[in-house]
Length: 126
Image 1: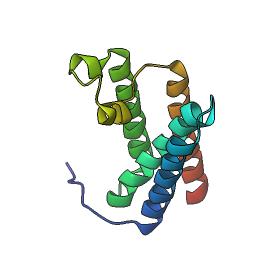
Image 2: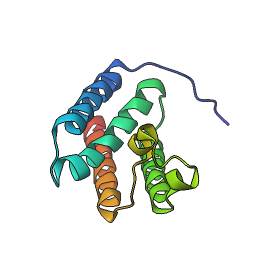
Image 3: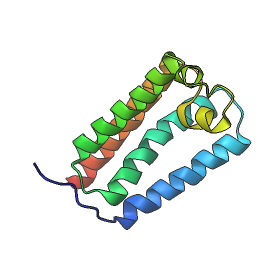
Image 4: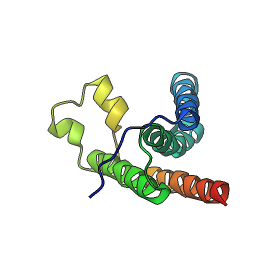
């Protein structure tokens, strides 16, 4: 079994930072029914993917699948109201990190974001 080695990829890190800044802007200044709730979720999986690829040289499909499963897990935590179960329903940080309620649109946005990543990565590698 291979051990993951830490690496640093400036390109992925720069993209992750740019996406993080976009997410902060969306959270601070956008209050609509599409950009913030849907497009923000689309971007966040790309952000997580790029952040992981910034430090680990893992295969595209492994990183993409792991990111997607992590995103689904966060959405499941919302479905079971994990914040409430843990007594964190009034925590801004818990709400920010885990979200507050389950939505199928989030699952679709996560999936679309990861499909975009895989398509771009496959096209880039050809």
